[in-house]
Length: 119
Image (tube, rainbow, N blue to C red; front, side):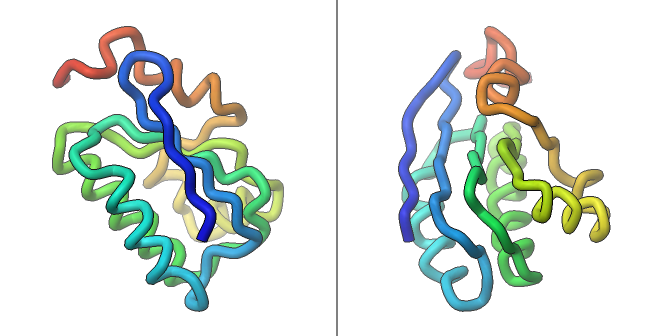
């Protein structure tokens, strides 16, 4: 599982997911990797450029990450979704659950200058 994380903007953790699929074959590895990266972070952007397929177990893992961030009074925002993955999110109505952004810069900026502050 190739996940890399770094801080951008006003204390926003940006995690790059560089896998073709987020599915039952790798969701356990994803959960372990993302949990260690998120640790105590509240403001998280998941860059999904290159992810071509997400199944129900992948969606479940993403929802778990969202709940973890929300539990810290934060949010998980997704960006750079491929056309196929975005269509799946819309079909499953996940675009109403997650905040989706076209670009990483937009996602990071959406947290605003006081992203580290509790809102």
